[in-house]
Amino acid sequence: MSRQASRLLTRALSGGGHRSTASFRPFSTDLPAAPSEDTAFVEAWRKVAPNIDPPKTPLAFMKPRPPTPSSIPSKLTVNFVLPYQSEISNKEVDMVIVPATTGQMGVLPGHVATIAELKPGVLSVHEGNEVTKYFVSSGFAFVHANSVTDIVAVEAVPVDRIDPSLVQKGLADFTQKLNSATTDLEKAEAQIGVDVHSALNAALSG
Image 1: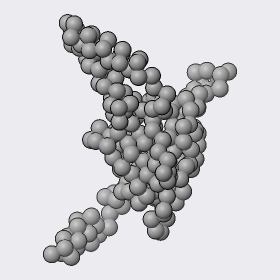
Image 2 (image 1 turned 180 degrees about the vertical axis):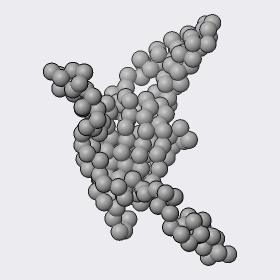
Image 3 (image 1 turned 60 degrees about the vertical axis):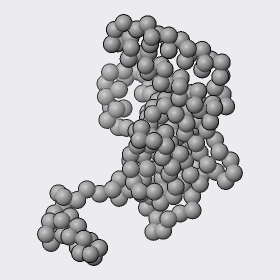
Image 4 (image 1 turned 90 degrees about the horizontal axis):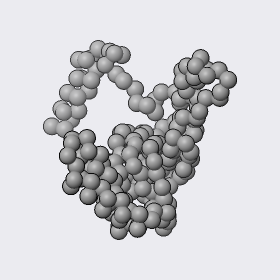
């Protein structure tokens, strides 16, 4: 039965025996590595501000991805960048756990290619017996088929640098704002503050 299902799936993908290039989209790891500079952005910037050097984008901090290996490697290569700096560059680790909107997602070498949206929470990087934890506000994790994971966050800070007293104060302030909010905008802004500070509090207690 499984063989029949495989044949049917292959036939469906190949268009009944006639291979159609329009129906096949290559994986990102099958494509040439992206350039380290966003040329379209640079050209547009130079037209607007020709006397000012263009700012760096997260792409500028990422090295070209390696080809997909024939076997699953023993390590996961991780790049972790913010809009203004690179936190981790081309580092080999055992595993990362990202705070995806669908829940905590562990990524090991050989993980299936996927894209995960990040929510406020803890990103943990596991390397042997050492675990480095960051609190991230939001972003995306791009898991490639070649055991490379690129993580882009809007804001991030090591968990051990978070001040618990400021977190508690912020949580209390936003909770009060939420209780006294009268408009939908005020409620939405206060709820975001509550959610972020609750996640910060959970990160410290975890």
